[in-house]
Length: 261
Image (cartoon, rainbow, N blue to C red; front, side, top):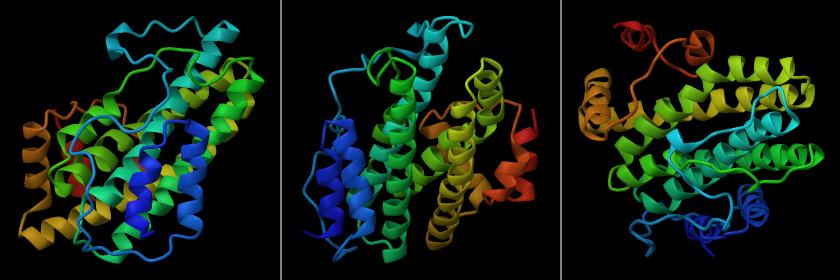
């Protein structure tokens, strides 16, 4: 089967571990890839997902205190849920948007595989803490943005990897400090790996955002501001992980704009 069609098939898998395995297998041996293929798939709607965790509004999440074992597990679970959604996002961008360079799809197949590794590591760690994926409620903000940008690849790369996932770069040091401070050194090690890989994922978003802006004759800063307003992207707030953002390819003008009131 053609690689982008296989990406859609993997996206529709509900079992998290089977989805992760499919994403890793697809990257390891993608086979033929047709950028021009118009693939018939669902226009909207959620990807394959398990019955649990229950999805609720972000404001409805009430995790246990971090001073308790359940609180530590709930925070690890929240990160695992982000990584599960990130597998879906990388698979979705591969099948949904046709007509891009082959390297665009190769990038996102690699990213899907790396997100699958992150999810698998976190799920294994969660089980070591006496819990499992699905034991806590979760929110769906990442996939909600994927839905809002499903008709425009420029909006997708602007607002998922280089906005929502870049927020993960900002949050990572504080989340790591909380988990290590609570005695969970293994979670800190996994977050170090995730941060290293996520810099590369955000860099791919930046690279393809600039490519698409150039293709459409758009100025990147102005295009980003317009897309963020149109699709109701969350407002970005300090603190920012400027070193990680710079490593991910944000230039000085973008970093300066980020820090303006």
